[in-house]
Image (cartoon, rainbow, N blue to C red; front, top):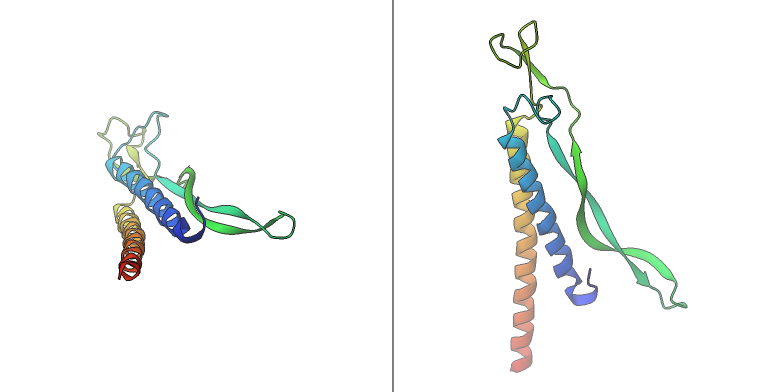
Length: 147
């Protein structure tokens, strides 16, 4: 991550990258909302992205010792399974139903996925707007210097 004047570009870009990945995970959840058997033989389990702050250590003036870390953006720390219960429905004719006719369905709730998708989109757009504003300020500064 960069520092100084252009560090905010790195921070916004890291936010955009993280939210783009989050949108991909949400899309995967939506695509598997009806998958009753995954590779492990269980219904598909919803996945969620775990973010973590990126910190940069700033060198202090007192002998080059590391001082308080500064914000450096965000990164994807991983993807974690949502361990909430599977939904159960009575569907005795389904090939994956148990002996009692109960079918375990994925723990994906489409309204929640849509909220996550809209939230990720808005955060992505906010970071893009920050980059565009920074670019506009630089262009205006250069215009002032030219005149």
